[in-house]
Length: 402
Image 1: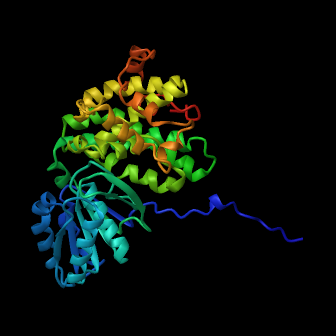
Image 2 (image 1 turned 45 degrees about the vertical axis):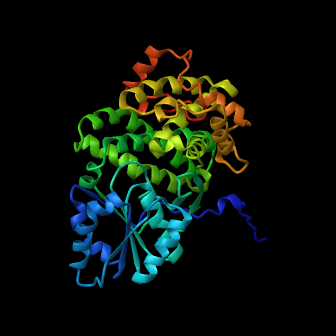
Image 3 (image 1 turned 180 degrees about the vertical axis):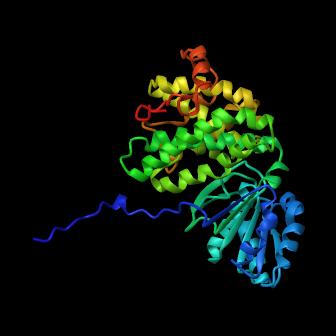
């Protein structure tokens, strides 16, 4: 008798794992012209004002000298990756008859370029000019208001066709951007291990463990990288902020979700005073808030230990630990509650926490990220100095093999 196998719906996944091609190295952009024009003959360069001023002439010269290139145009995503900006970019693409989008800049510029390409069904090349996010890799774009308040994200059909990571470009960005990228990348472990650490799916397990390895790399190598810009260890940390978080998200897909750190960022963007801080800075602060929630609402002592281990690391490299560090020391209680309520909206990923959460509880955690814990600080310091694969014990009960 023939057997019939019924597949569970959650096994039917579509994963956008990685760019089709990655080129990286010092000065690699000068060698990327042929690879870029293979994807289109009428490229539209999308970037912010600073990035366009930095590389527009180099890119135009690089592309126009290729025999197959018809013409090159450029458009700014100013003032933000918003719906109104996308409308303007569509007009620019139509006028230029673009058949290729080339995104240049930070996270919002690359998100705008990727979304424009997605909506017009065109290939996209991403060229990050800082290491502040993994936007150059991912099949995802975030949409903000023109004033910079987060609205929603849009999953894309695929990752970029080509990612060009030129270390020379990244090195022109302020060091603060790399520090922010470290904070953003760290969140992959603290969120994925909580939302997906109990998964029995092989690919999800691989994604979560990749997030653990990413965390270890950052905790072990970031201080030396920041002290030696351009060095080999600096390159490794840049790779760990630009490339590896996207790989975690690509492998994990919808099964490897964010939890509290990113929703807290989203809520903070609705406070005007937060706009002076970078995406990864707000996310890094959100990690501490998430751990504080686990500690106070779940009684999770591993979360308390993880927070005790992160605080000196944050202090060492300059990541924010408090609202004051984010420039929000003078906000009112009403403003803080509004931010918390936005983070706790019904469709927010903060509800991936393994316990219910209210706005008032979130406010309590947001103002207590640095309170002392019962964790042994000396033991924590010793753990951090251990070899990479064992340097930080996991705060998640199902992932103690760190």
